[in-house]
Length: 534
Ligand SMILES: Nc1ncnc2c1ncn2[C@@H]1O[C@H](COP(=O)(O)OP(=O)(O)O)[C@@H](O)[C@H]1O
Ligand SMILES: [Mg+2]
Image (cartoon, rainbow, N blue to C red; front, side):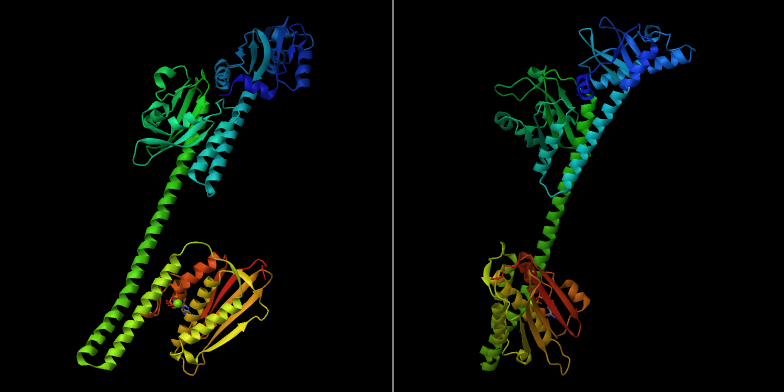
């Protein structure tokens, strides 16, 4: 709590004084010279009164007197209200308002050690408000950053303890109330000994100062003189101290408690409590926001799980239909001893088993955690491998009629990439491009799939897969990255692009698409390679 001493050390301790016999004119000159509005009047170093500009205005000008031939003793105020160095600023302000005085000498052992004016007090109060505001601003600002609640509370505590006009001990803690239980958990602390940290790690509501503040939702104060009766949680070598425990509340619920240590004999101050309540209210808002954010993340996660399960169920259902169909035809073939049917059915069974295995691989790829396994590799070689694989895979489809154009930059070189990941991306994109060509029924069109590799600038590697297949409508483009979205019925898993995007993101790259229905699409991957050409 700020006291007169704090104010004096801030403004300076020099006392401007005059004597009763000095002329008012000379006293005014001194005031003007020193830039003050009042002087203490001393006789033999003892306080005789105070002379101020107000005395001059009222008792000289209004009375038609002259300052040069009037002595200070004739107009000075003798009925002076004095304070001690230990008086609180709050009390000074109250005294000045009550007694209607603008200046108060500060006495120590009957000696004048300072003079404080209403201006000094108001300036001080304004500056403490400024500090409170900036502390709250800083807290709010900090809460916008991606920091944990524990870090935020520690910051709040350090800010509180660093404020010069709060004469707290440099120790304290902030507790958070457990949800669905009546217990406080210490989440941030400063300056506490290991013993205290251990003893006060968990405090039930209602127990000791912090617990009582949590239960009653009212500030608990102790000046340390009532320790015996009121400090319920005790430990060895507990030094005398008091507490200021401010509950953090939100809509009638206790979210936590700010617990500050004060010196034994500390006087209760409204100003301190108003400040700490403002901090507690700010923290309440921040804690609630953090909780809501966490809830939102949780519910978004649950929604995503729900969608995934639904998509997966749909996907497996169509595969199961295929399997059942195949088995039915196999059985019919056996019964009728029809080899042709047997083969058709068996083919269906095999295809659907392959689909299950593809789906499982896709799912595992998508769920796989961890960063890319970087290796020095050649994107051209990977692209070539994928082209060969696709040509081999689709040799029994009419894909044989699709032309693969290899537009590989010849001097591309090697880069640090995850070769398996990049292989997977190109495979997915080329697979889609082939499907797009196959599903395009435009007559007389010569279908092609073009794979481009090139360097862009100093630090970007571009991999592009373009086709002149069916292209995509706005609607398909909007959904192509949703899990399990496919326009290929039971043939598709709707995971290929999602996995591609995931791998590209893990490489800190980007995936973009350009597509026109009926004309074709181009998928472009841009990867940062930080000039790590090898
Ligand atoms: N090159 C392309 N041309 C046209 N449509 C495409 C192309 N690539 C992807 N798509 C569309 O995006 C959807 C999702 O693709 P993807 O995630 O690979 O799943 P899937 O291939 O299993 O359907 C495809 O079903 C298709 O409708
Ligand atoms: Mg695909």
